[in-house]
Length: 358
Image (cartoon, rainbow, N blue to C red; front, top):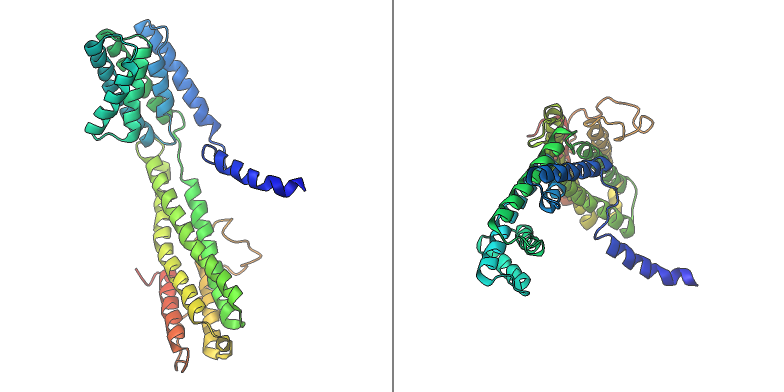
């Protein structure tokens, strides 16, 4: 009795926790680098400026420790600019109004206004407000104190960027290859499903499931796009990029070809779903086309020979199966539109696989 009642609460809890948690834990090494950068910054700033609480520098070191060097550099610049403007706001507010109890409110309003006037991003504007509040809270409304905090921030940002770049700089290319292999396999599976629909009479429920699998290819293709952007970004300003650029370029070239095949396969699935008729399975020319689709699916998987792309037991023959283009000498009197559409898409898929189409 208690099980079904708790299920909605569990779903709500997962939705709430999903906003601030990840399915896969972040790299512990990156977390260790962030802690090391913050600790090192703390001691460096304390030694240089004889400051008991170099909070600005430690915060900057933690903020700039991102998933790649390019993001670290961007966050570092953003943090330094935010602190520069925030310190200026705090010093200006302190000069105008003095140490008033409501100076915090004035600093927030002015910081948000300055961020808006300078067309800063919401994150940068928040950095300005936080920096101004910290300045006032720590009691530093003198110019010298503000300059020291700005140097604290610059030191922390520099240390964070250098540690992230020089100590095993993060590279995010492996996920791209895995995602492309998965998309290749799923595209081949949908192509085989279309062939199944041409060989055996299917009902509407089967067609809807086949179409759902085809639509999933579009979402998966979008995810690969995002992973490629992340991978390219991870190699920018990365000292380790040289050894990974060639492999990423090869993966990118394969994906550029694959995404066109995905478009054709989705179109084939949609055409079959919208114009399906059970008597198609009795047409010998359609059966021959189904066999060519299976050959295309076989060769599509061979384009990316990764261990996870297919198992030897499923495809023991590693030679290409496509020979010459398939032709239908006489179109079907009733279903010639569907057959012609499938043939054209199949021709394009074949051209992409064999490299005969750019």
